[in-house]
Amino acid sequence: MTDHRPAVLCDLIYSNTEPGHGGRHRSLQLREIVEEAGFEAMVMPVTLAVSNVACYAAGLKALLRYRMPPGSGWRWLRRWGRNSLRFRNALKTGKDLRLLLWENTRPVGYLSPLLAREAGLPVYAAPQNIEALARGRIIRRPSDYPLAEVCAEMAALRLADHVDAICQTEQWFMAHHGIVAGFLPYHPPRPVREQMLKVRQQRIEKPDSGRFLIMGTTTNPPTRQGMVALLKMLSQDQAADSPAVDVIGTGTDTMRSEFSHPRFHFHGRVSAEKLDELLAGASATLIHQPLATGALTRVAELLMAGVPVIANPVAARSTGHHTGVHVFEDEAGLLALGRSSLPMPPIPSVPEKVVSIVSRLRSYREPAETRNQ
Image (cartoon, rainbow, N blue to C red; front, top):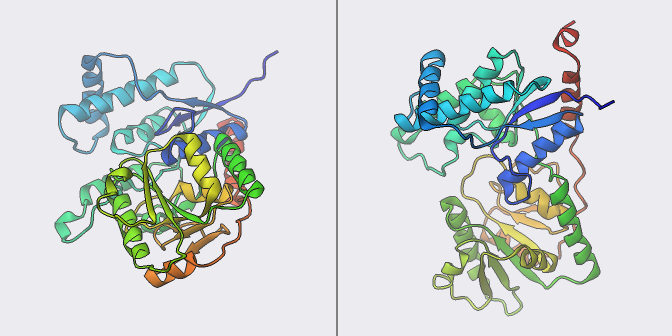
């Protein structure tokens, strides 16, 4: 006799189960939470093998039926149509669906809570960030504010039965739009934890190299701005015994001409093995962000690996439950922390909020009529 498991329909941003980057790791964490609660995680595929004509037809129907927010013409009709068809195909599988876990809160995903409500499924939203503000834009005049996009995103989130933000600042923002959101901090999923714990063991077995590590991709403008700010501040330290700095990530090798400091070593994109080697030998990782949405998943991962984190307040947002994050406000604070001997942080425990979410999801294992009694 097979063990029957009810299913949670998961509209995730990343359906790939292999570790890769922070966004994918958050999707993996949510999937792991669903399975820990005793459900089958039924992840909707990102792609769907249907014709463009079928997508356009389904998109037009969605536009008229659900009054979708205005997009940019045919492209959006096709996207909404594909999302509608993939959702409806999932409903036809015969699975015992109890809940929609909705992470894909980008505009193309606004249909999901509408379709779930129509199908009688409760909606649990766990956005990675406020998407309308996730483009690194700076508001210099009122016309820069993406008002229509923010209002559309908040209207979609209000359709959920429960919302958990990855960032505590975004709880405050959502509250101003009538959304009482909880806080679901990022905790590395199992494959990421296992890899980071291997790095921690390497750090225990050998002394660190006395080098700092800066990670990021220069293709993301706010990330590049933060890296440049860090390197400019570190350039002011002229002490002979100042530590070397390894800078890694896509495009970082192009920064050599901009910072020809002898202590700075630009590696560009590195292999997983090289990354582990640099993490195992780093005295600390330095992070600076000028502006951001969501929360940095890499902080919890670095702490899991036993690497102290030196970060500015924006980069350190929503990390108050961790030990091992050292916050600097300015250049003097950064250089002072850089001269300090920072202890290895303890292994982060599973946050209580994650445990409570698992418990809440377990309640959906009961049929709706039983839960509502």
